Amino acid sequence: MTKAAVFGTGSWGTTFAMLLAEAGNEVMLWGRRQELVDAIDRDHVNPDYLPGVPLPPSLRATTDPGRALAGADFVVLAVPSQRLRANLAAWKPSIPPHAVLVSLMKGVELGTTKRMSEVIREVAEVPDERVAVVSGPNLAMEIAHRQPAATVVACTDESVAERLQAICHLPPWFRPYTNPDVVGVELGGAVKNVIALAVGVSAGMGMGDNVSAMLITRGLAEISRLGAALGADPHTFAGLAGMGDLVATCTSPLSRNRTFGENLGRGMTLDEVVAATRQTAEGVKSCESVLELARKHDVEMPITEVVVGVVHDGMSPAEAGMLLMSRSPKPERYGL
Ligand SMILES: NC(=O)C1=CN([C@@H]2O[C@H](COP(=O)(O)OP(=O)(O)OC[C@H]3O[C@@H](n4cnc5c(N)ncnc54)[C@H](O)[C@@H]3O)[C@@H](O)[C@H]2O)C=CC1
Ligand SMILES: O=C(CO)COP(=O)(O)O
Image 1 (cartoon, protein in one colour):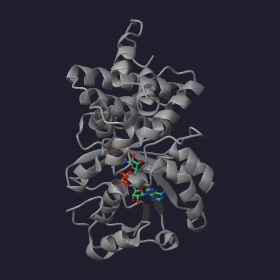
Image 2 (image 1 turned 120 degrees about the horizontal axis):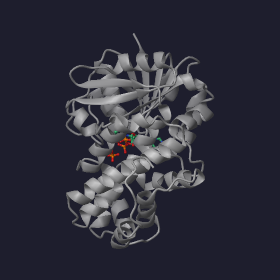
Image 3 (image 1 turned 30 degrees about the horizontal axis):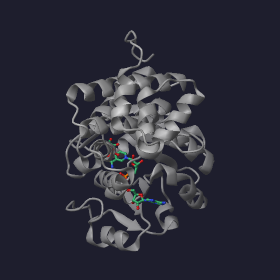
Image 4 (image 1 turned 180 degrees about the horizontal axis):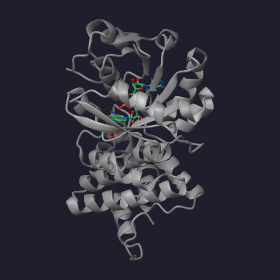
């Protein structure tokens, strides 16, 4: 039986662990807090992140990383992106030598501008073919309530992607596709959070669906430009990890990033929005690292720029809208 250790008892870590367990794998979830770990391990619930969702009794949980990692074939990482480096360094000594490390995270590291797979490779000192990424339109709450979803599993080694695909395929509930384009799949997941903040701000200001569609479409152009500069396959952005995730996150009231933006657009202050947000809205921090990455590669990302302005630099939503709409008129060239 395949053994998986899942790190992070938040909404996506727990949901993915539940999928893996129901697909017949031996799964151990790691969490920081004993009380929550006990609730998962003993009562088969996660009241903090998935209230009302029964978890499979075969899903076990522990606060001991060594116990979670013993004999693991797959090590699945689902902590907030900015927390990965320090945590992974602590877990590294117990990671089995042949385990595949899988990122569920959608962020870019502040300071280094590294994608999560790059952080994993660097900290765990593993080669490309032992690092995989899962990303797609996967709102955890919908999946936890057993609604169907598809995703992308990416690894430069297609046989590893296929192994991961096989252990998380669970008809009729969850359908993973493989893709060798790790860079594109990861960028799609991280940058759509920034675009979802922008769509949320516009919705909070009372703007209509034309504005959402404009931001989603031009957001995809922005993601594709950055992807092209970083060597991603342009086709990835037309797929589930690109357009698929962008549409789900930008339009769903379940999205934390969209909701964060919406609250800002309604006029709440940043401090008020942060206080009202209990879960991880990755775009809030990653908008800065994405913009830095874009600047390093000389890529223009106007929506990302105004998101950084509104979230971090005191720009008003109205000013952001004016800046975007008064840019010089251009031909529409997708991805350029
Ligand atoms: N929730 C969703 O629908 C989806 C989330 N993701 C991505 O998955 C990643 C994890 O997100 P969620 O599970 O949604 O987050 P969450 O906010 O629901 O949970 C975060 C988890 O990380 C833990 N955590 C927080 N700070 C920590 C630290 N310093 N060290 C160790 N653990 C810490 C929390 O205790 C919690 O268990 C994010 O990168 C997110 O973008 C990806 C797809 C879907
Ligand atoms: O990544 C997600 C859906 O695929 C979840 O989006 P939020 O983090 O904005 O909730």
